[in-house]
Amino acid sequence: MSLEKSVQLHCPICRGTLVNKATSFTSYCKSCDYWHGNLTVAIDSTDDESVDAIDDQSYITALDGLRAKNFQIILDELARQTEGVKLSILDVGCASGSFMSLARARGHKVTGVEPNKKLCTFARKRGLHVIGDYFPPADPFPSKFDVIIFNDVFEHIPDINSILESCKANLKDDGLLILNLPNSDGLIFRIARVLTAFKVLGPWNRLWQVMFKTPHLHYFNHRSLNKLSQKHGFKPVTGKIEIPTIEVGGFWSRLQLDRSVTGLIKNIIFYMGVLVLYPVIRLSEKDTFFVIYRGDDIR
Ligand SMILES: [Zn+2]
Image (cartoon, rainbow, N blue to C red; front, side, top):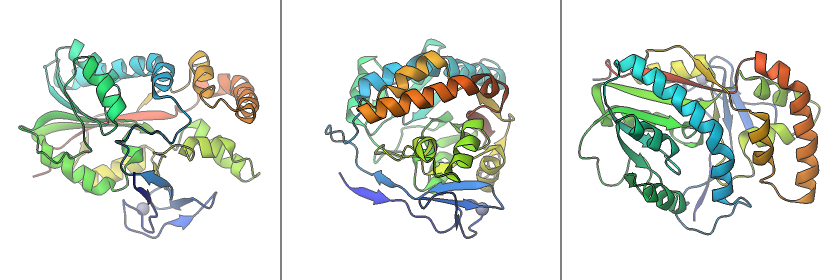
């Protein structure tokens, strides 16, 4: 496996200079309201020797319930935008194929791309068509897609500008791009950022997933995501659609994935904090959102 540190000096949206902010590994563009994480990415994660202390299978189970609910929200919105037509959909970084399964159940023709071997195998066992590669894959796709979707994937990709160009190249003329990702206007991001001023770094590090081999490299809000997408000719056809990331039950099993004793104590404290803040969280801006874009201006 090769490791690559994503150090970006310039804003990927406006090319302005990024300014170091909040912690040593995070930088910010004021004019775009965009955050960047200078973190190390495991470029080749196709080996089965996981450097994470996390078992993929338990991770999948912990997240699946809530994700399924959120994926149905996305599929409902997609059906509204396309008047229920059956579509060819490419799921970039499809993981275990949860979104693909739900899309297939609605009659869509789905293709996945997933570089992680274990997840790829898991998805194929569900009878899904998954290409074991990064996007764009080495072998070109036989045809263009109606829809390309990134579910919690876009924020992990070092060169997002070239990825959007690849989306253009692989979408039909009136094709749709769906970006579903974490929200820097979400309450948890805001709280975590305030806490860094008091040297409380746990929640901030967790948001950026600094302990994972594929951490978050970007944090967008609705405005900065639109600015980036429009630069590549993608017009938003929906507003920002917020989706919940926290359900207290599922959240506990998610936190328990860190099994060390200090991890457990930290988790209990964090969990109690979340419980106290839960009513506020429910009333605030959600921590994940998606936007559907149309690429009708792209050629
Ligand atoms: Zn900028």
